[in-house]
Length: 116
Length: 115
Image 1 (tube, rainbow over the protein chains, first blue to last red):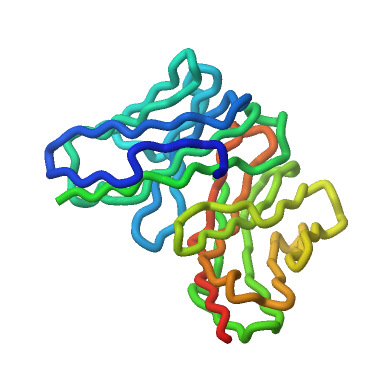
Image 2: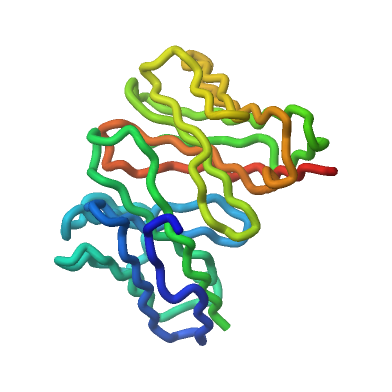
């Protein structure tokens, strides 16, 4: 157990639907990151939050949004889902933001989203 | 923008032998960190080893070591005494030290350790 909790582990939904993925960071970590991994591909950065505020945005579609709550858990909302959105969505957390930690992240086990 | 390239989509190695996975990156940053992550069939992302760019000494973690060539922008991973449990996808990743903590990943190398 890495300490980063993602729910649900698996999600199957139809095109056009909306889903919410949840992430609880490791205790003490203030930063949360969301990544998308399509089949057998590398991870693509979506968005970062630090202590409730958006800090960095990557290749995140307008149909996708995220937020980090006061208890530091984060949610990734995916709407108007398309077949191509099927992927493994990872959440990761770290202690701090830029320049304060030489370490990599701690990843959750991911949510596998299948859009049918 | 940074890019990370892993030129070997797939590799195989016999158990107990040594294998080296290649990674090159492109950046204009002077301070950064490099990482190797392992993704076994369980899909969990596991940090294998990391290297600070300002350190000349290559990082080592048990059977895992890196060959960091800053001028060549190369960061290869050597796995010694390969074990069946090393079978996984391996991703090289880059992070600038002052750029939002975002990791940029390579496309991955699928490693198969054969008995």
